[in-house]
Amino acid sequence: MKKEFLTILAQLEREKGLDKQVLIDAVKHALIVAAKKIAKLSGPEDAEPEVNVEIDPLKGDIRVIVGGKEVMSNEFGRIAAQTARQVIIQKIREAEKDNIYNDYKTKEGDIVGGVVYRVEKKAMILDLMGKAEGIIPNSFLSPLDRFRLGERVKAFVYEVKKEKGVQIILSRRHEGLVRKLFNLEVPEIGEGIVEIKAIAREAGERTKVAVVSKDDKVDCVGACVGIRGSRVKSIIEELRGEKIDIVRWSEDIKEFMKAALSPAVISMIELDRTNRRAKILVAADQLSLAIGRKGQNVCLASKLVGWDIDVRSRESIEENAKALAKLKSVGKKVAAVLVDAGYSDINFLSRANPEKLSELQGIGKKKAASIIEEAKNFKPEPKQPKEKK
Image 1 (cartoon, rainbow, N blue to C red):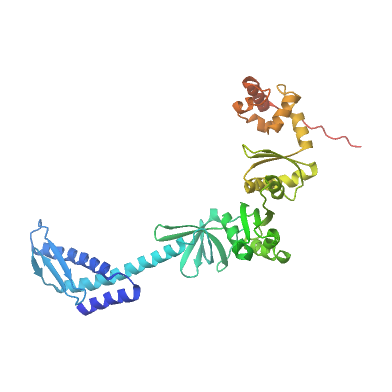
Image 2 (cartoon, rainbow, N blue to C red):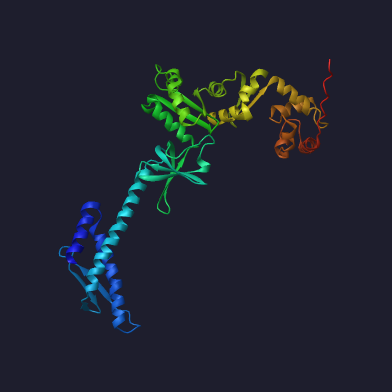
């Protein structure tokens, strides 16, 4: 038993790099428990024997002392060997978990590659090159993501935590995935020549990326697009067809807004720097382009520049003012004030805050309450059918 015990200790220390003393302490604890049980069987039921265990790590000698007297039992050697084996297995598992945790914890905020290993109701499981498993909850998948078993996938390392082992939470919706994909595909970004200043993403729909060059000789947008769009195409393919707009960042906020709202052509920009709000005027034929499908273009542009953006055309302002002027409590002048303040729609006006509305020029508390009430009860006139010619 001594030889087997020493062999196990040496194997653990040599092959697994685990502390021998940790194993010895665990064996001591197991022997103390066993000795107490043996002592209780031969002694009074109520007695709690005092037990000490001494282990010689060089010779493998084990002494068990109960109540000041050494107790000899073949059981102790067998227990020591079995405990050593159990502790080895446990410590190896713990060490492997710690290694996985430490390895992937440093990768938080980066991307990893894996193979689709299992698809569950609430998540997709990736095999991360045989080292660990990554979990992509369904809420962290892009609407465009449709993967088959065995398919290779890149994902953003969202969080690594110790919970029922090691959990590596991955994401395909996070804007960090787009950022890291650009780092991989565009050498100029990896080298620090081109910098990504901001990203605004609607996963599965569209992403806007603002870039700037630190070298006048390098075109930041061209570098990201690549020859014949080769670089950005690779990223779009990885994102399963998600559209990507690459815009030029500028310190001039107006220029940055114009780029962010492309392809629409901007006629005029009025800034409220205190509240970081912008009123943008476009021609009637540019309004739908600026706003985008379901307001997506202006919403992403707003996120990208970090300002609230209100896009209108002269024609829409005039139409909105005419519509508001139909309210009995609102005249032409008040209608213009309301439209200018952003209350360009009667439905929106009906949900306005009375206190904020009363702060506008020519509108007091009573008038504000009257306007909101009238807007709530307003019924538009039915459209008359066009006469056939």
